[in-house]
Length: 287
Image (tube, rainbow, N blue to C red; front, side, top):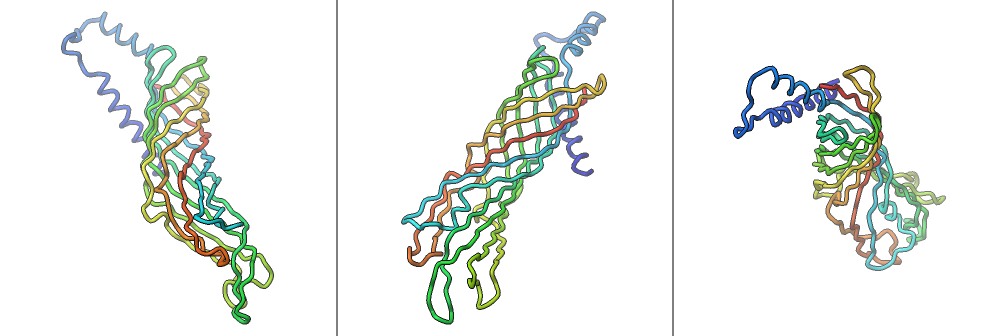
């Protein structure tokens, strides 16, 4: 409920800011009082309404990065970090101004959560304390990562029909916190343990990377449909693709020493990107 109130207040603030800009007087052509002027202003207002609204929906998140070893490590469990898929919510407040019969300008403030995960079953060393020997063991590496952004977007909206429209425009996302990541390693081979006799699964929770998240700049484009509920209220389902070519965080270097036969090569993670498909439902109020 607090989040809903915050989004409503944000939409009203946007409305006031845009309204003040539009209402500023042109000193070279000042307004004159009179019935004709009043009628003209009323007519213009009817032709060019604006909306405030709130929207909520679901992200489908697609994560990827390039992994490169300084020397090969076959079946490394670190391959889990090459990609990720996940679902997360988003919430937005918006204001939408008509520019013409077909075009509108829309400003949006968004709380955008992100989540993605992946798993990979590879091979690691299994050290036998009793015999002092090392053998291969099958292990599953799974990670889950979560974070959140504050988004600011400016869209152009084009009406294909009275109800069907397209939206597109730039967006910037500012991180609200660091990237929280949980790793789970599970030994699958019989007789393989992390300790002497019992431990087969290890959970580690960490904040990664140490440098935190970057601000991201990208673009969104999609389609929506206006469903009138009354003269002043619209129900607006939308689907948009969020294309973000900016890195989530700086490129990372670590070492892969989980298979001693292949040494301790450097592992570089580069070009980490996160794109999202958003499906949401909004309520717009005609002002």
